[in-house]
Amino acid sequence: MLQQDRRNGLRQMARALLLASAGAFVISFFLKNRLPDKGAILPSLRHDPIQTDTDLPGPFDVTRKGVTYLVEPVFNYELWGMVVSYHHADSFVDLAHKMWNDHVNIKDVCVIWGKNVETGVYRRMKFRSRDFTCFYRRPDQEAGALFSADCLSNNHLLGADPVVSRAILKARKGDQIHLRGWLVSYGQKDTSFRRGTSTVRTDQGDGACETVFVKEFEVLKPANIEMRALNKISIALIVLCTGVLFFL
Image 1 (tube, one colour):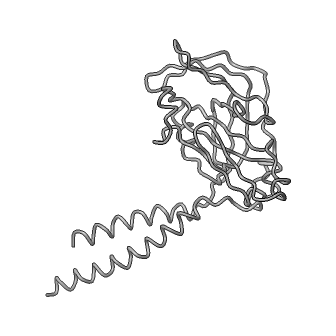
Image 2 (cartoon, one colour):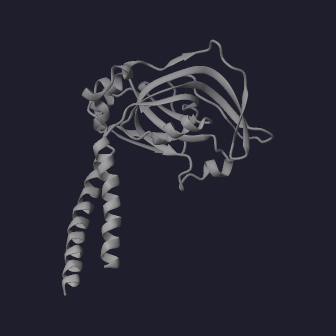
Image 3 (cartoon, helix red, strand yellow):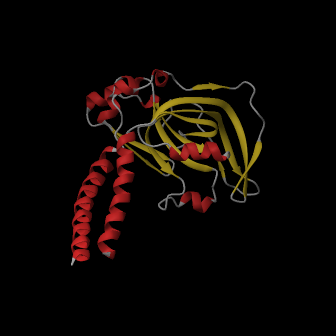
């Protein structure tokens, strides 16, 4: 009888914790991707990207997952920005990278800087990334007047170094980042596959994205740390409580 009472008590605790964890999951799911207020923006994000053509390396090979790519640097490139959306190249909805056997473009990040972070207009806008494209929507004319398309870029990030690649993959919406590398064109040897890069920030449409071979990548200030942690903890507790209820 005592053992049954303990079992019932554990089940009641598990149900209560499961309910609380489910609520925490829902709340954190919607808050973990909030863009920070303009007061939290670092001064370095007011800078425009830096692009130079001095001391460029020559073309070089990169091999990932058994495929060799020829990478040709066009400009040195350095960028400070806030991630407003991103797309993982290995996403199950991304068919193009699989079809092209492109393993070196590991992630696309859409970032803003300058006027767009100073005014805080980004908090009123919607951003979304898909294969090779960043979409944004301005809700009204006032936001449209404040927002500058010249202070936004969609960046196809190429990673070869494992440490740099892990840092790129960890970056999330709202994170303030700094990267350094080269604007490049690249392609697979002995195939017709080839991708270029934009070299200005004022273009739009097809070909307007920057293709960056990343040598250094740093999250200067992560966003929503508490909500991200709460989301992970709530998922773990949901799994744990479900297991307890199932096996008791």
